[in-house]
Image 1 (cartoon, helix red, strand yellow):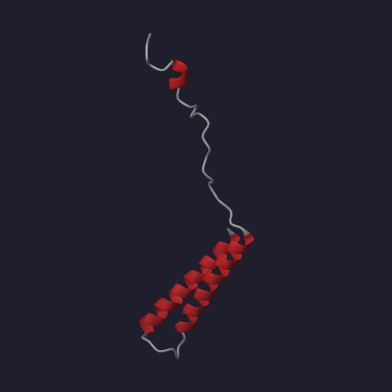
Image 2 (cartoon, helix red, strand yellow):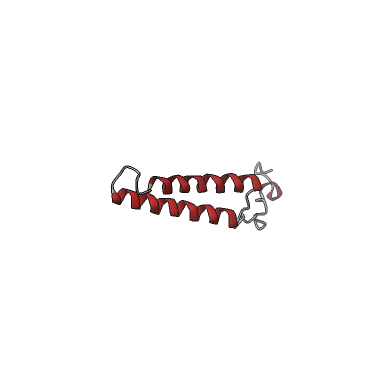
Length: 81
């Protein structure tokens, strides 16, 4: 008699059925609202810091304006996608 397990008990589980990861997961409505408002708020704050009478250099204000625009665009993309 052999002490090795039978071929039935050594059989590997069937791996041919695989679950595919979600390609484009969807967020709930509350998550989309919170994310959109947060990104939009940061964008408006950055644009506010780039005002002409705000303290700072001209280059710093232009950088803050660019950052503000990027956050506002991200906010719009967050809501639509």
